[in-house]
Image (cartoon, rainbow, N blue to C red; front, side):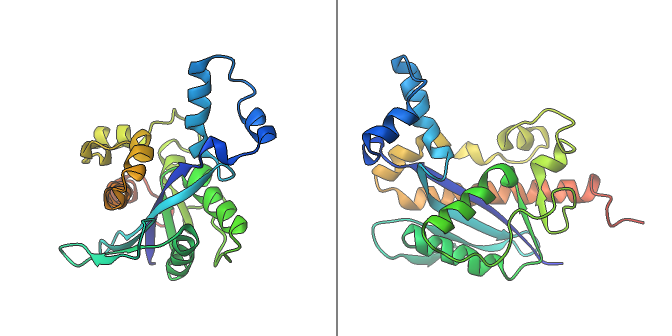
Length: 226
């Protein structure tokens, strides 16, 4: 069975891009300046207030993959080992590249993808009129098609959730957050036009997720075992 791991990076639209009624709605609970800043930061979490600026995809068996990312111009290059193809474009082109790639795999693997990445991709695709090639939210309790590692490692919510960084450190896996960039930095990095750094950061997440998936598959996955 062929598998692909994917992860997205998102960035909120400027608050000024929304009309007055929308801004009032988005900030209706922000009665202090601190709360206002918190609400503005949260805009990156919703597909109606943010866009996708990068998608990384990786085959855990071959460790080959693709990264689609936004930049000012058209870029196309490969990693030093030749295994990762980087391709830039606008958000619509990122989504088209994602849907074309994911259609070639039997299983897709995410970390918290059911609650974030998958619905985000589907809504953004609908808004930009990009046709999907498969359902990213199939039956939850069978990881054969969609293995969400956060579901698996919490036994579908029976245990406390931790973020990817925490799981990686607990399992002795190199954390993707060790590069110095975090999700909170993406706005500044994007404005500074450091697009390749965002692409590499997104790739780091799927590389770490691939190792976490290997651990889960070897030690915690019993579905296909006798």
